[in-house]
Length: 212
Image (tube, rainbow, N blue to C red; front, side, top):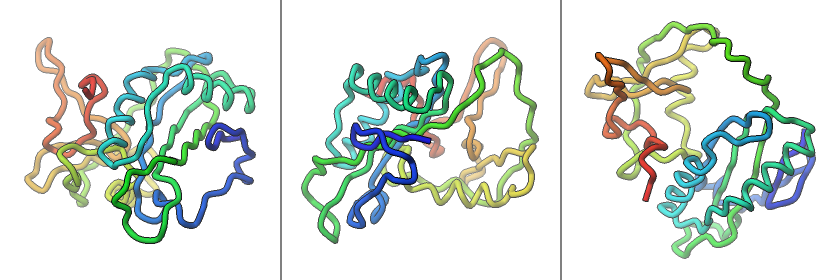
């Protein structure tokens, strides 16, 4: 399997990070995951704009260039000979001296991971049973939750349903409000209106917010 690291295709087992990489040391990094259908990245602009906004909040300099990102994704797909894939586009702070940095991170580490997926046939996935978790959805560090490397709350939730492949864990806030699943969003319909929990519950900021 091949990944793309800072624009260069690497065998996954050969790619290396500096021990001073601040995404590794301090969790300063974010990612977006999305599907590629027949070579087309689904909702690419929306994902990348959310990523860019969050990185700006972390003081990591990275600007979304659609042509550049599309070309990078195509390189990963071509190297692996895939047309349909799961993509994780990861940007972290990059190497810096030991200790918390006050200056901007202007040499971020950009890695594109991928794994093959079957082409969608329109067949619905099997339903899962929802289980309310004892672990509460933690409050975000900033005004909204960023899709950051800080993922331990979700790991604790996943551990609660370990060994139950047909079950999805459902997070509540400490106040008892429904927030989101471990790896899913919550929606419900009332009449002709579709609802989802408010961002104040600690869910990820929705893609359709445009993130200006």
